[in-house]
Image (cartoon, rainbow, N blue to C red; front, side):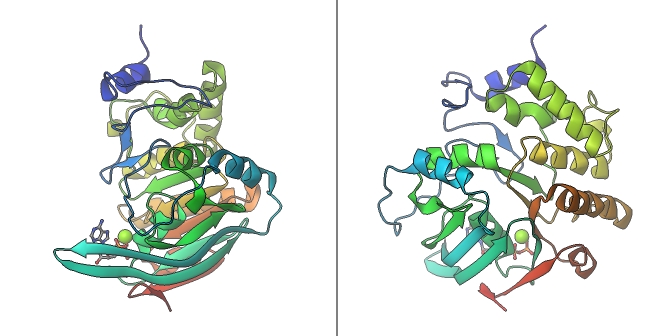
Length: 295
Ligand SMILES: Nc1ncnc2c1ncn2[C@@H]1O[C@H](COP(=O)(O)OP(=O)(O)OP(=O)(O)O)[C@@H](O)[C@H]1O
Ligand SMILES: [Mg+2]
C-alpha cells in the first residue's frame, strides 16, 4: 500500500513538480505547510518581497558550502543592524529598529520581552523564515542576504530546525512520518530516514509511539514529536518560538529538560522565545527586547 506520507505530499502538491533529491527539491510554491503560520519547510520560502534589499548575487550554493566548512567559527549567528517594518493600513511600523546580536556556537539563548516587542519577528529573521528590510543575518559564516530564496530554502532544510507553540504537526501523518518528512525531502533512503526517526523519537522518550497519530497524543507528547522532527536532520541551530506556551508546567519542564539535554550533550545551539522567567533559567543567556530594540 502506498505510504501515507507520499499520499499527503501528492495531495498538497498536485500538478506541481515534485523532485526529491538533495540537489533538486522542488515542491512548487504551494508547498507543504506546517502550522498555522504558513511556514514552509525548506523550499521556495515564505514570500518576503522586499523592495529595500540590494540585488542578490549568484552566490548561494558557494555560500552554503563555505558555511558548512566554517564549523569552527565561534559565532554561529550574527544579526547586523536588522530592521523590519510592516505596513499597518497606511502606516509603516518599525517592529525591529536596528538590532545587532551575536549568538555563539553551542549557546542556549532565550529571547524575552513584552508581547508585541518583536520577539517572533526577530526569531523569524534569525531563522531565515522572513527577510529584513535592511541589515543582514550571517549564519555559520554565510551571509544569508546573498542567497536566493530557493537557496535559503535549501539552507533551512539542511541546516535549521524549528519548534512552534502549536506543534505544527501534520494530523494525517503518524508521529514518525511527521519526523522523517524533512529527511525524505532531503533525498535520504527509506532505511536512513526510518532509522533516524526511530532514533530521535527514542531520544525524546517516544520510542514506543512511532505509529501513533498526533491527535491521540497529549500536548506534551506532540511537542516532543515536533522537537524530534526539528532535530532529525541534525540542524546546526534549533529555533523555538514559545514552545511551552500551550503546556502545563510539568510538560513544559519535560520540553525544557530535553532542550537542555540536547544543548549539553550534543552542543546543540538553541534560540528560544519565551515569556516565562523560569524557562529562561534553563538558558545560558537572555536577549531582552523592548519596542523593537535590545534593552
Ligand atoms: N506580518 C505582519 N504584518 C503586520 N504586522 C506584524 C506582522 N508580524 C508582526 N507584526 C506586528 O509586529 C509587532 C511585533 O510582533 P511579534 O509577533 O514579533 O511580537 P512578539 O514579541 O512575538 O509578541 P507575542 O509575545 O505576543 O508573541 C506587533 O505589533 C505585530 O502586530
Ligand atoms: Mg511572538
